[in-house]
Image 1: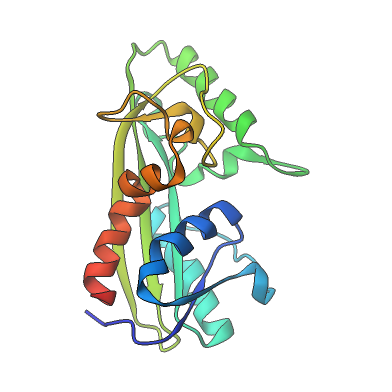
Image 2 (image 1 turned 135 degrees about the vertical axis):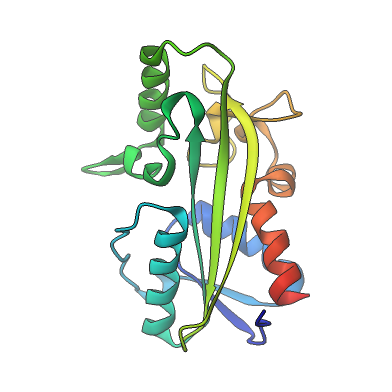
Length: 202
């Protein structure tokens, strides 16, 4: 497994919440983190049907465009009663003509759950695939999950995305009711990051 030896890492995301989470997770390792938006990078089309496929598209496009090692994250919520939806289309469910509306997306998910007539608890998990890519085309892959279930109504104002409707296993609050440090300790992204750090930074 290739070790990360540079002092600057490009995070291939335009999502400010995700960038903040990743920056916090990498803070102990003395790496300067820069986001794709700060470098004026366009968002590549995510044409794959898996988290890994889309993460690879984003990481390699950013590494090629900048000559920097690039870390990408493709993640989403997988709801068992919806046969795994929204899954890789988690962000797409939030798309509107004026930007992403995750409140609308959560209502869409809840409406689909009610229509499914599946009994509660509605088990679900957040999944995260990280790809660390170098400009020479090499990459390393790390995957993480956070198990839990969908709750309704939405609760909490912390976090981002679908956090207000996801209650992680072993907790009585949603991701959106947790302070960021607590969520970052148990999240799907934290799970994947522990593997990334062990593989490439340790």
